[in-house]
Length: 78
Image (cartoon, rainbow, N blue to C red; front, side):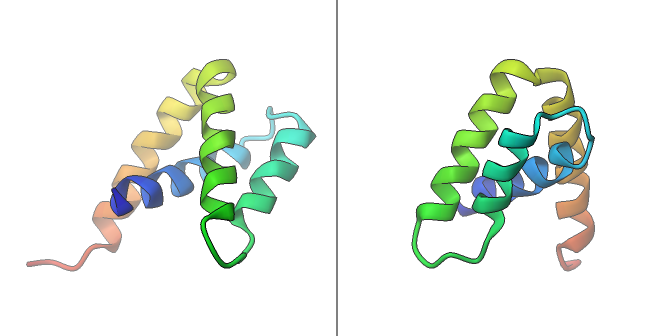
């Protein structure tokens, strides 16, 4: 579950950088990326990811793939 949340956060960061996303959604994502203690920031990121999933599915799909490749590069070799 923790890996899923990390991958979701990476994907949201990537898709927010595309530029075609409206500013209020970007602001919400920035709030979710802030280092706020507790589960608040993760909950906001999941809300943003749901909005992106519904309205920006193609961009989120590409960002999800990019986030997976980033996770593979960051993981240590066995």
